[in-house]
Length: 249
Image (tube, rainbow, N blue to C red; front, side, top):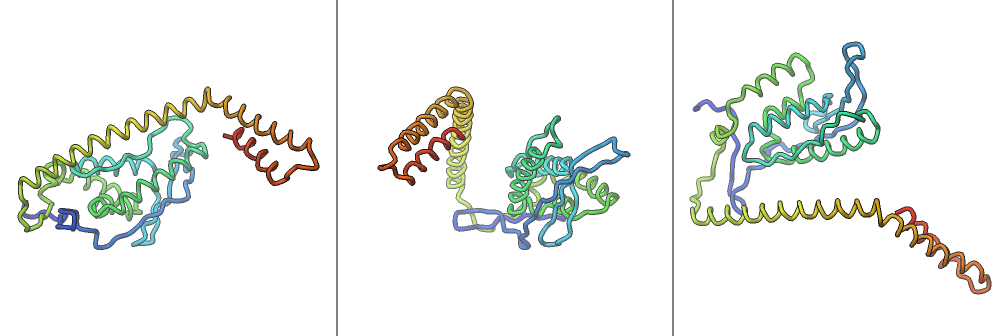
């Protein structure tokens, strides 16, 4: 294990231990989703142009390439939270709305990846961003899949600070974080449930209520038009606009 090539450093920051920042930070754009075919049209897929800022050279990646990278990250970095990719979809994959929605979510995912001090320096990630040759892609892919520094072995690549850490303080911080993580997880689940329920109600029962409210506002607007000498065009226009807005909602 003395010949470990990769290394990730933890340093002491103002709030305690933290990953050392990437010395060569960069961003990455995902653009121009294009329908492609191979095997003489038998296979159809969407290709995205991926351009890292530190090279400026675009590469073209399919969703399956993102999926491969995501699974390598999960396998290697068991102590780092890797965000989910947008979901797979069997039908409607080539509809414009779905393609645009997936592109937006891939951009969010990529922004997290490039801003993370450890994930952004992973050799497999660099291979994903820079390799444009099919033959080299397969070689690098196999090399990443044979990586031995995964799971618990990943800890051997970590360089820790020299400062002595008080064990009691460390345990207390870990316990506090566990409490926070559980509370946050439960709260997000509750919020998701309530929001989904509210959406369902608005699509059902509340829909008619909004239409009734919109009609009521527009009825008032029509009433004002019957009193020409005292009408206020600005107020009447605002009331009518409010009614139309409720109908649109």
